[in-house]
Image (cartoon, rainbow, N blue to C red; front, top):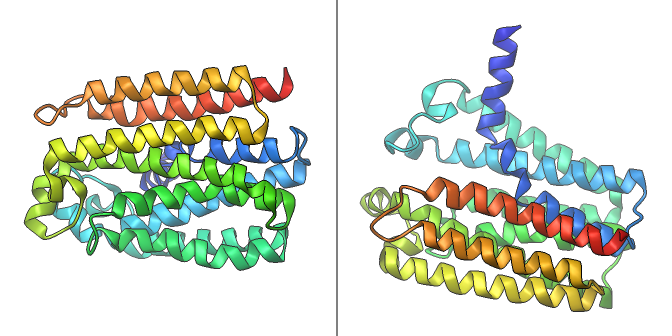
Length: 289
């Protein structure tokens, strides 16, 4: 029994299951707004399943694609594949299986979702190679997560229409928010990435320049979050959530400096995980209270 539990923990660590808190709350917020707070249980379950399957496939494939780099990087050599807890073949199998599950869920959501699911999956898998040729890999990741609010809205409507401006703005907000904190996270690997010829904004601009870009991305994200309130008809509770999100982003940027990344984990997970939950809770208060 203990070996089974250890294996489950290894696979959960491989795909960073806890990081679902970044994308899922925004997908659910978009779905609730699109359905006036009353999605069917079937639709709700399928959207959750699609987000989880897509994340699982993308993360497993990322770990598979980066297995040699992870083994050489002192910070990541303890990850599941380099340490031997999960084999490369098993990680690839999980990535492909989760991708197939994602497309199966898209099919249940409707023909349009299935057609859109294929390029979405390719984009998610493609991120794993972006840092090999582009310093804008952070935006690639941002778009990968920013798709989720738009996809959830399309799943609710079953078509493209004028209502899509609202989730599009929310998606841009998520994309720039994620890209901003990914830039900060990449600062800890700038020396290794530079040595291996990998691309990132910290490699290209230095830590100070990259952190400035991250701040600008987060200002844009807050603007998009606020604009979503106007288009979606949300009010004071949600805007209060945006204000709290702004405070969390300010705190995040105060935690890290070009010469001190010791508190980066708190900036990355605590601040951003809390932000997503706060935004979702604030939107729910506006919808149901």
